[in-house]
Length: 295
Image (cartoon, rainbow, N blue to C red):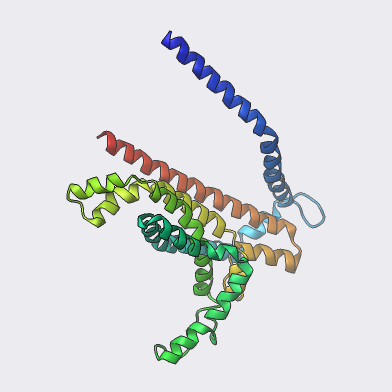
């Protein structure tokens, strides 16, 4: 009787899942079309000349250009640099928020999320005011005698990286904070009762249990930053040229939709490859955690 009851419950659960899936199918269809059709159009456009003839010349021209590979390297440097700084700053901040009392944590989280309530264009120009040679930061540094002359903080890679980190840090913090907040405090107390120091507890308990949140935040940061346009365009001052800016200039200057489409496909491939690498690393770490637990 118990086996029959379990079988009936499993069948009911499957029917319920199929029912809810059927309700979501229209939305999934619309979202799928909205996501797939532009990609199909870009792939088709990448094989067309300006006269509408099919060719692979667009790929030859783009992939043989040194500017393309330079833009690719710049894109990776910006994305991975932003990700590294977000991990270094966001992980301790998430740990501090998760350890604080709920009222204090909510107040601090509101301050952290405050930049997201402002347009990215406004924030970018705000950093331009702060970082330029006659800006507030250089005025404070030279006025206090810390530097003899203004530092080159904008219209370069440094200024672009600062603006991108400022935008992405709250988005990285959210999943990491959620993961750390859900960690059972008794586990940390148990590690302390067994003689673990704070650093050991963080390394052996908190970070492994929050690895999922860190990986989720890392994927969000990388996917967002790999296609950033406004921040490099404003704070880079024409000296920092990732693939997004290369695409815009190819269209605005040469009206070359074929080459721009090839660059867009290159960006999609890069994003897909890095996403697969992140997911593979996450599964590898999760598998090691399971193996250690069984051992």
